[in-house]
Length: 117
Image (cartoon, rainbow, N blue to C red; front, side, top):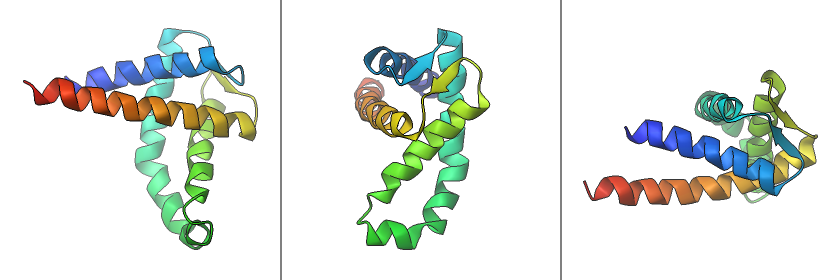
């Protein structure tokens, strides 16, 4: 149940990103659901590999390169999906930052919601 709630809230967060920032477009809630799933899969499978491969750059940049990796995951998801579009890398960077901020809020809310049960 917790996973489904997080998935739906993540899709709503993607719609909010598209509403707040014009560099990200999502055509429908079903597209947002699929995009949230693909972003989650990319972050689970590809992100750890990229973090390990770029560890020297990440250390030299004091961790700031992780923002670039997040933007690449966001941009890659938009590249493989119809109904989810990002206008370039800069838009992916800003969109992923907004989406990550919503993700922190979602994680906090879910922990509080399911902790009380």
